[in-house]
Figure (tube, rainbow, N blue to C red):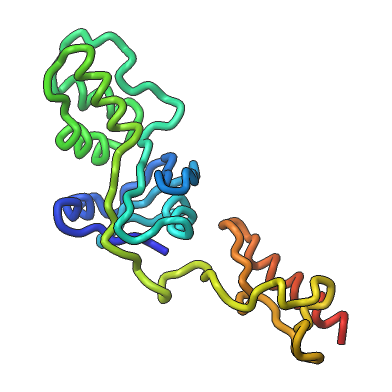
Length: 195
């Protein structure tokens, strides 16, 4: 599900429509996805967020690497100032995103250590979602009938003969990319073949 940003992080919503290839992680579970992030008028979405939301827990942060596999500040700065930082970020990110990051992640100074800390923050930027968009915006839901209670080949209940469960009613959740559709079709085929 898309994640909501409020309070001090609500200015991010002014970037609605901006997307970037990122790596997003949940520190608690160490789960990570490298996909597109989309800023919306209410928070964060896109494949990276839809994937990580299955692992995110309320009151826990997510961390975003805005430039996976790229060292943003590696080039020797001819000038060490905010315009140079902004241009360096623009070389790798959309202008609106680069300008926003240059404003909020500006280093405390222009020493090598300060630039290194700035880069670390850009590769591990914390967000503190206030919640999710809810089931109306969900791509897939978790929970349902425990697979241990079903016959694997037929999807028939182990407890009530003749009762079958398929698709999202079963506690099976796949990643984005058609895996949930495949599960729905495959489980339906297994159950139909057993009838």
